[in-house]
Length: 206
Image (cartoon, rainbow, N blue to C red; front, side, top):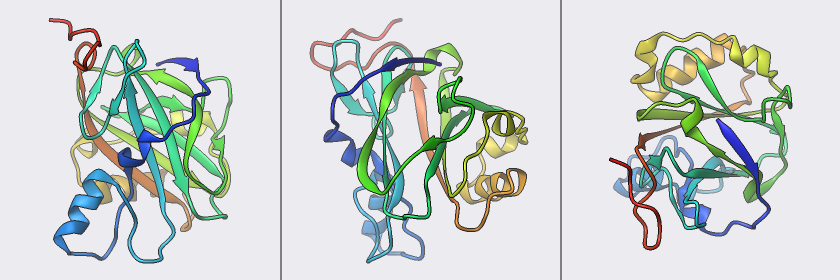
């Protein structure tokens, strides 16, 4: 993946934040799980937000509207738990992780703090390493950092790419020896060709 720095505050990624709501069977809970607007009751919220950005700076919801291979992605997180101080994000389309964040030279998870809709200070373009088609974005919130070497060595059964998120989460927890307090968020989307067809944006490539 390619990266570029950015420092523009985010406000529109709130609707892209995906937060699981355990134990709820209300119809609106499924909508919240899909669109990620809020948590449930007084439970602390922990989640990852993803927005797509065209080359001319227009932003869209990368989960709800899919991702486009020629666009950049902006990430934000919400973390209301003071014991979770590190974040690791990777893509999954095959048997191994495709790095997204941290940056390649960082060597370990990104340090994070308590906050809502906190932006990461860089953008990433998926086209360099990801393929067109379904993609899973995995976010690992942990109390101690994971090394990039440890995550890079992860090898998964190809069937887990399409498995239930709970099955993939169980495998990740076992293979990475994640402690019970760690939070795993798995976001499903698609990578489409070209750029998002927004007003003023470049059209998709054939």
